[in-house]
Length: 139
Image (cartoon, rainbow, N blue to C red; front, top):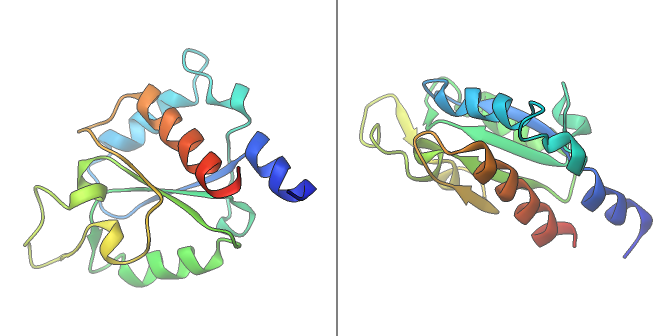
């Protein structure tokens, strides 16, 4: 394993993308970064650009309006890409599946490495999902 791959395991940089969620999962992602759960002790850092990210956290079902933006962001994440679908909406599209403005769950658009289910999922589950995805892809 190269030095770059080892450094990604120890310090995954995360880009969060909301593709149409109600913001419940977004609040839990922010809670996972607070001192109580402290995802930063594992090296998890939110970055402002997908070009610098190792992990793409996606919340919400993919809406028709967000579809081209989501694909563009996904293409900007450098290889190897790690995608974590956070919440029931991102994992299965429910309860919005079948709506005329919803394209579907995340895995209908791009491959997903780890699903973190819940409405909204607990911060511990989000941290565990990130760690699992990074170990699966890089470790």
